[in-house]
Length: 351
Image 1 (cartoon, helix red, strand yellow):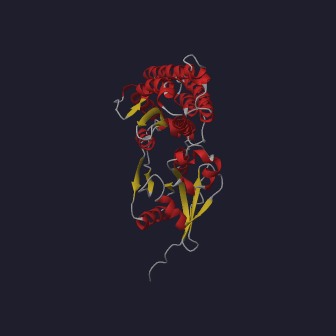
Image 2 (cartoon, helix red, strand yellow):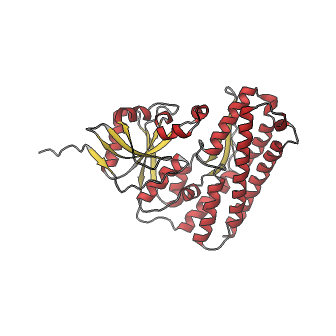
Image 3 (cartoon, helix red, strand yellow):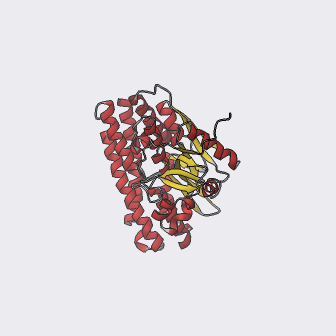
């Protein structure tokens, strides 16, 4: 007799804690599910997530800014000694089948969705910013084939959500991230790297990317990016129309706040990681760096306020004068970012 086909699975022992960044929240939940109680701040830190990068699109006349590394997942795996891979399956049926297999095996599945299908995300995002959200990650924890439902957790919401299976399938292969159907699979070995080793590896990569990485023409990163960024933004009034200034300001706000989910361009979270790491691995070597990034978090929050002003009044004279508070803020952000990474490298070499 053939075994009955499983029609309902729900991983009741998955504990979700709402958070800001969708990927960070998802990864924190997956690691916690496997017995590794990593906070979102630790995920950012151990994933070498801190960065500053941008690329300019001359056709659309806008900047694409990244304050958290697009390589966070793979850096997290490398720095902790865990294993995982992101898959992109074009065929909808095959993509669904693979997700159901993983859930049957007892593994929750981080899945990328079209943001427009994520109710909680849409509620917290002002309409004028929705077009600037590229994608969104949720964690699938179950399904019911008879009811045609998928059970999932979304970063901004506490309670388990259900989504119609057809809507879920469409959300996986629509929006700006085509061909999509992307998910992540994990494997956790019995033995991980010692925490102190993971911290040093993670901080070392942040320093490497910020100070010594190759400077690509299309996408600047680290110190090179922060220098050009400050100078370029101070010159917006001379090269952009009011509409283009407002559009770039919206892009920057979405990047600084991670879609209105975090504050301080992830500098505050990284500060918390450094302070906690210093206590866990012994000594207080990273406290000065933690203070530096906490201060930078406040500066980026002030920058966000200036972007809101530009959206309302792109030609505001008090912004574009050479000695304006805005120009001085950009100079201070540049100088403090460079000083902070220099200090972090100094502390890393001492520990």
